[in-house]
Image 1: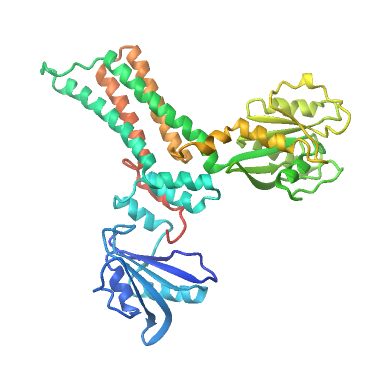
Image 2: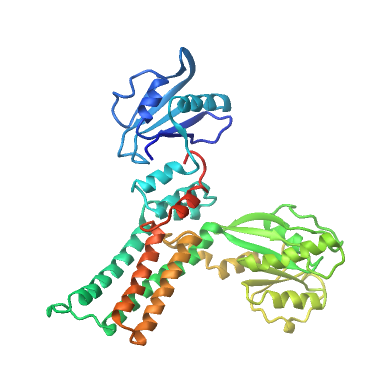
Length: 451
């Protein structure tokens, strides 16, 4: 990280301004070579200066240049930001001049990566930077800001500190058994402390899994036989004619997607191909895809026809969805009822039709109820925000369960200590106290260029 990096930090295209960010030991001197105005190497830190970017004697653009000196910068290095006029040609020309005078083009996420490696932020804060950029609703923005401000990191650090204090007490007993004034740590004394730590970690995991709904939305698929009204329900939920609706079976051959927001949470909807036995090759592919999507979904909206008796295909779909969070929609309730409700064992059932929108509001209310969206909307937004973080917390929790089991089986305390330390290390991976180069490279490669 001894070199100086540069990249365009704003969207490249027509706009009012563009920002070229430069970070590194030579950031100020590099920009100073192409800046006509004040001598940037003599100005105070965190100041903005008017002037022109020049290529030898030619003025390229009229700019404002921000100079921020280490260590109080995003990367903790010297940082210069050139605010030039927006536009592809002008922006690229300014970046080209910066690169020609000694900077290197930054990799995706490299500015944030340097902030992490230089100790300014931890890994959860680094991930929240991208979450904040990608936030599509107010809830996700709040979650990202809580993490960026360090609240999530503090929760994990406090828990690690409790484990560390327990480890220290155990190690003193192991290393210095001759000291009589040291409290003897036995499995019976470790057990209540381990239970307390485990309960705290379980609470974090539970709240984080609930909160993941806020950040990632609810992946929802609408499934059922052909011509039961799946596409009509999608259109009514989206309030637009997204899917083609006809009386011809098999009209939907592939997934049709859309998104709405309910109580600040994105409901990511997919209308799928009707499930039935078919000899049509294209339709058969769509049916197989529909069945596979059931396993990936957070919520299944299973549509049945009120005006028809249950078929073998209906029963097959009902059986297939038993282990998923499912709402059964009995559609076309404006027609004569022929379906036998006693054959349906699901408890979340909504009656609707798509002629007068009857039941669509009830469907939305049932989704709110199933995912506790009213409660989620009011909580404090302080929890782990992605799969990587939650998975590591679960691994740590599983290790603590092994510890409790080992205590019950009276395994020697020095063996118990090894597992406790493993749990402590897993929590450290969440905030980046321990990490591999491969993990860091993979995480930051997902960032946008210039961030």
